[in-house]
Image (cartoon, rainbow, N blue to C red; front, side, top):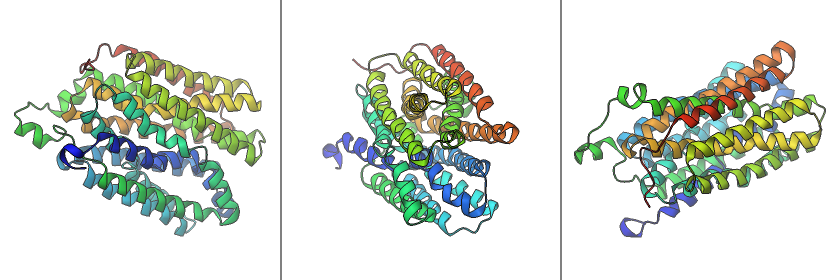
Length: 402
């Protein structure tokens, strides 16, 4: 696959496979059911599980920022593969931890740090350098990989807990995910021309300072602000679904079915959004996706009927799934390739830490009134704000070639 024989669609395929067992996929769709047995054994609460999820997201934010910096200097494969290995080992290590909150919190911090490489981010750097006309579709296929396994993960997690115990979830998912990502990043990803600072400077291209890239750039703040608000709501909402439905006395099988159906809807949303990004102005499409997610929260607030749960969860899942596609596509159209890994790294911090804040808000809501209403109202408002904010981006700075 070197030189002329390298087909960039291999990167797309490898990214889809890796994301099918990616860090975010496991933590969003399986984590709630993975921890049911753990909470029962240790006598912990749902708020404790939310705090561990927050640790994962905080670690992910740090990891993404570090990975973006390393890619801009060392290329994609080496730093990404090393961090993916850390994720797999740390997730498997959860099974051996003593029932101590501090050890769990630290370990989940490492799970998040390494898991930064088990996302669409490293593949997106290659795709943004090798694709133009079909960039949105390529990114959509990569993030859609997670949706193929997402319907199965809740079922698998519940089955493993019932047969082998909750620890088996962490061991099996950790080893499978880490291995898939290391293989994909080592053999099927290459650094595109112009993606590193060294290459860009050697070619005589001017490079902007950090202030010019971040603080003095309206595009950075508009993308970061909309992604932060949407991530806070989507992660906070999706991580709450198992607890919400348990509080409404849904049985475990129905809960697993709701999460699985939401994941199927997410798959359709990811592929459709990726396809449409190549054909319609991305800010308009992004705004519509965020508005759909806000509607999902409204549905969960006004009804406890199973049909409302299925539709509401599905709407929220569409936003969470498409968010990574939207994030990377927007950055590729408003920033040059040499800045892509650094910008996507920082904005992915907003995505990950926004999710951490969202889960913390849910934990606070539970501790205050033992319910989800206040948090879900806030999430709906934030998604409406994100839908409005992204519309201010205006014309692309890097238009698609005809």
